[in-house]
Each structure stands twice: as structure tokens, then as C-alpha cells.
Length: 357
Image (cartoon, rainbow, N blue to C red; front, side, top):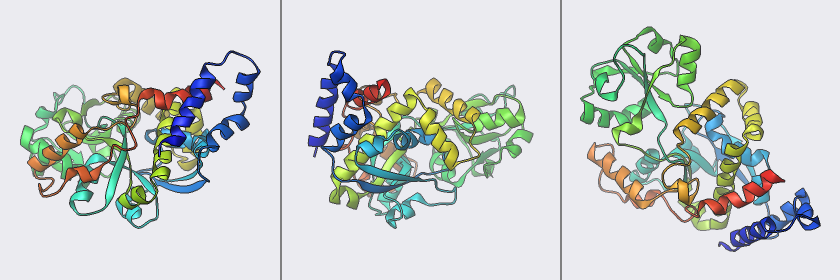
């Protein structure tokens, strides 16, 4: 299975060691670059990737892989499909309407516990970027101080993090208020908290409220699931592991490229989501750089997308302990390490070459 990728790596290592001259110049032409990869790849495959939201910087690496031709170099034709908030990515995946989706570790475990043959292939975000936001200057500067305070929250977060918040800090159900992706109710209630994504809601609150909210990362609860995961069906992994591996590798290389120079991906994001501004994408990328959820943890050495058995085991045990999951299922059915943990150099050799050329 790995013959194509070992060849690709050897070719880039050989190129990087060349002296400057006609060989290097020829290698930097688009034709030669595409040939060196396509010679070892299968014929082009069409893929539909379903996002878990509208197009935004949090999906930048996937858009980058389209914009820069990285998917094409792996013999793939990828169509990215943003999914509206009310969409169910698992249903779309199981129904065959998309081939891969962007998900989250908890949702995959929940699906597997229900007997749904879904599987996670890679974790783009090593750390959870869901947060609670509070007003400055009122004393709500830690999660434990929110006991008894109104919290605007979605049903998804209510069913996952709330049981842990209740057990650890004494939160009660009557604190919950529905969050409908409108920050106004939070803005008018200075003693409240609001759910958000690190890279989005803080920006909206600054713009609409005129102040910087206090950011309380939910990973501080101790529950830190993989986020923005690449998911697919177990059937696809069994039937076409080569296609799966090419898609995962290309997506990861897209992320390295995006973090190096996000402009190509950002242009496609704006096409898919006209509401997306350069200012918001810059804010999101700055937050990603500040908190470093993508290249932290095991990804430092094993490469973007890294996962480990220990992290998945811990997550499953935590969810079982607070009653989110029943103990009668095998958490190992929720993921595979077959397509990740190849090392940073595996993904970055070709990206450095592409950027240089």
C-alpha cells in the first residue's frame, strides 16, 4: 500500500539534494512535478468531502489542497461541500452523499456506540477549540465561577460537555439557555456565559459588543477530544484503502501548505462563503497560531493528523464515567492509526518543495 508514498518521498529527497542547475530547474516545472507523482498514483478518483459547517479558516487545509493542486497530484478530484448547521454529517456519510466528512472524536464514539460503521482516520486539531466566553470585569474568569450563572449553549455541547461541567463544578440544568448562533443575548447579560469556537465567536463579540471576552477553553475540564477529524465509512477503508490513504496524506499536506501561506485556500473559502472576510480569517489564523491546536501534542513529531490509542481510550473512559456513553462498546472501533503518525518529514518534504518552486 505504501509503495506510492515511499517512491514520492525518495523523489523529493533526491530533488532536495540536487545541486542548482538544469536538473533542479526542470524538476520545478509543473509538468515534471505532476509526472513524478502521477507515475505512482492510480487514475483520478472523484471525492466529495462534507464539512461540518460553512467554509471558514478552520477548514483551510482542505481548501488549500484543492487550490494548490495537491489533491490533483495524488490523483484525486475533490469537491468540498459545506454543510448547513441543521445538516447531519453522519447521515450524509452513511447515505453515500459524501465520501469523507469533518467531524469530532466524541461524535464518532457516539456513532460507533450506536452501531454506526463510521471511523476516524486523522485528527487535524489535537486540542478542542470549543470555549465558553464571559464578560470581563464581573468575576466570571474561570469555569468554576460560572456555577449558577446563565450559559448560552447548543444542544450538542449540552449533551457532551455539560455532564462533565455538572460533575466537576456543580452546574445545573436550569442554567442552560439556548444558543442559536446569535451573540446578542450574551451581550445584554453581563453575568452570562456563551458557548463559542475559539476562532469565531470572540471576533464577533469584539465587533458587535466592543470588548474582548474572557476565553475559557473547555479542554480545561480535562475532556479534550480530537477535533476537525477526517471521518469515513468502514466500508470505504475496507474496499479502497489506497484511495483513503491518498486522501488523508493529501489533506495533511494541504494543512502544512495552508499554515505556510493561506492565501490560495482563503480565496476558495471566500468563494464558498461570501460572508467570510479577510479580517475574520486573519483573526482565526492568529488564534490558531496563538493556541497551536493543530501542531501540538503528538503532532509535533508524528505530523499533523496524529492520533494515539491512549488519547482515544482516555476520551472513551471519561464519556462513560459521566454517562455520555454506555460501557458496552469497543472504543477501538471508532478509529484507525493506519493512515497517520508517519512523521513530520513525511508530509513536509514535498510541501517545502512546492512552496520553493
